[in-house]
Length: 305
Length: 282
Image 1 (cartoon, one colour):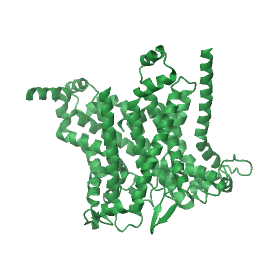
Image 2 (image 1 turned 45 degrees about the vertical axis):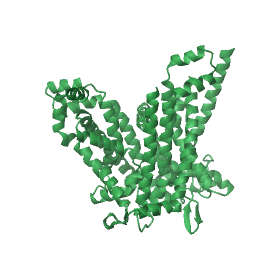
Image 3 (image 1 turned 120 degrees about the vertical axis):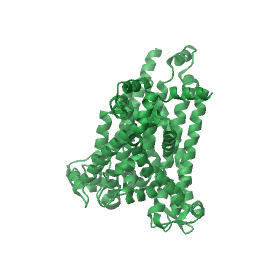
Image 4 (image 1 turned 90 degrees about the horizontal axis):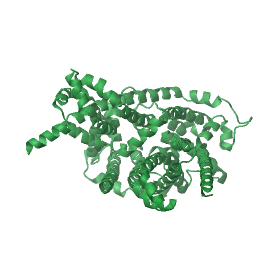
């Protein structure tokens, strides 16, 4: 039993001839990346978890404080507001982006003239950075809203829908690419069979195309959900959380999303950055949970097929 | 008769999409247009086409390049240095690491691989404070040392993508090279690396887009009085003289998107492929 397992492993993974010489050069092949990984991720990550249980301003003056940072974070109205605002934003942007992207992808795969050109155009905004995007759109929104004597930073609704429009402009092209790949992977004979059976194009879409597109839908939904949750640059550049309102002695930045709220907890003359770090850990847990859900969903879909 | 109707529908669809495409490009046209207009004209109406009165030629560009105490071309220079060095470092180091991981099935390589995959789900805000402190204390806060930080934080996705591809390369080729007397270094650089080319391009595209547009990491890590990148510079303009001089900022925004658009139009195929490959991994 043991021998069989070993030989299978050897065949699948390693040839003696190849493995040994590489293994001897671990310092050259693995060590540089791993060292950088420790500096750039592992050590900061572990230290971050530790510091979320401490009171500190600088990493050197950390004092153990137990769960008090988490308590403060969960009772902080600005954090709670940012949390629900972000969740709402993520869901709305998810729905809009995916419905529009799928529609565009479906239309572009109908052997339309100029489809490649349109694809090029729709994908382009995806390459522009979030800060620049925010600036471009704040000019456009303000140019329109100034006629009504207002501005994108004056009303929460403007900030919300402004950011939605911006994000749609940026990400529809991206999701469209994934949907196009999915649409092109549907076997042609399946469509043909539907046509021969006399299905209308609407029936074909509902009963053949969409069921076959489930893997693409899973990828895109989760991608836009995590993108929505992690959004920072665009939020900072477009509204920076404005307009601010006063609520029970606390200032609430009404269009501030989670990531921005966390960053602000570190920069704004904070006396205890532990609260910011605790918020960051909560944020990490939420994002990781969404990713795990995605993994599960993709796996179970794979089993079905 | 039926065929004709279908043809008509298709033409209508093309026309509709042509209109949508034009609307889609409008924001970029607006930036282009406004970069040639005087500040007052932009404030008055950003949607008007520049005419004899509002047209200022290259004045905004000249002003933008030299305005303030930090010249824009320096930011461009640092952006280019950081992007080129980081992406080169990531491609070389992570492809080597991925080869090691997939060819040596030891506990160490499995652990490293698991940690890499894990790092993909961690948002940057989780590590940003401690990371910037670590970078500071190790002296990694210069444009020529920040690539190490990028390698560390970006290793996860790159290693993951490379491992996925290396696994599909038949082992026999490397065995043949070993029998012919090739050491691991020569086997990797002369045999394996050329076969990795498609993945190198995909990962390269993803990393270029990430590093070039990244704002928060360089903002926190770099010493801001001395070094800025393009996104940092543009955010800084908005905070300081952005509301005062829209024309100059529009010119700088245009200058910062032009390289991206040129890059996109020249290697569109690879970019779209790379982005789709990265998305599937999520």
